[in-house]
Length: 239
Image 1 (cartoon, one colour):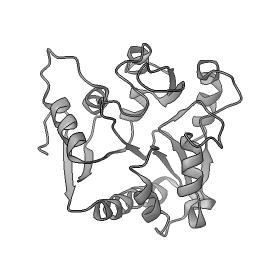
Image 2 (cartoon, one colour; image 1 turned 180 degrees about the vertical axis):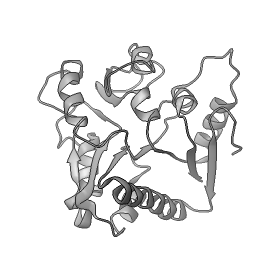
Image 3 (cartoon, rainbow, N blue to C red; image 1 turned 30 degrees about the horizontal axis):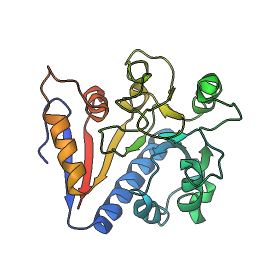
Image 4 (cartoon, one colour; image 1 turned 180 degrees about the horizontal axis):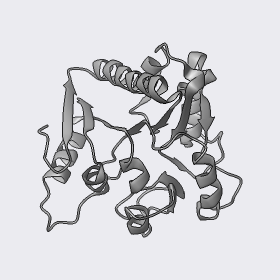
């Protein structure tokens, strides 16, 4: 992958997903350690799905003052916290264990029936976390969505508006089940360290096509997020 000036990308390619997971976990831990040293605490937002599971395993082994770290999700499905499709359930099972049990976890799901009704409450929760986020780890879907910023969602434009003052947005993608709650584009783009984690040749091709699209073409959400990031975005990829 070649970096583009518009997105200030720094690519990192690995021979194996295990190597990627190790290096990504180290990068996250180093950024969190720097934040703790400089500001006394650190904040991390992670994505769900299967891609980050190996990285979670590696991150659990990193020695850090985890009691000074706040962790939340980039996005989640509007489901009970114990539902098998819940990102919260996945993070609790695979990340918040052993040393990381000491971290402060802030879930996105509330008792509200619909995510749109919960925006003010979730905003208040997240504003208790050190902002901007020290580290945000994004994934990407085959349609170019990142977080729950789906290109097919009617709510995308509001969620991707850089002037949106909320930290989160509610979306109902037409191509995926369940209502969603997601960090807004502006919240993600403000992160001190923005890391994109993708695997497989198909996603690499989708990502490269998204970044190569001309200004006249509609940009996929992953491109829109990275174009708004003021610093360097590190892209981690392995087959």
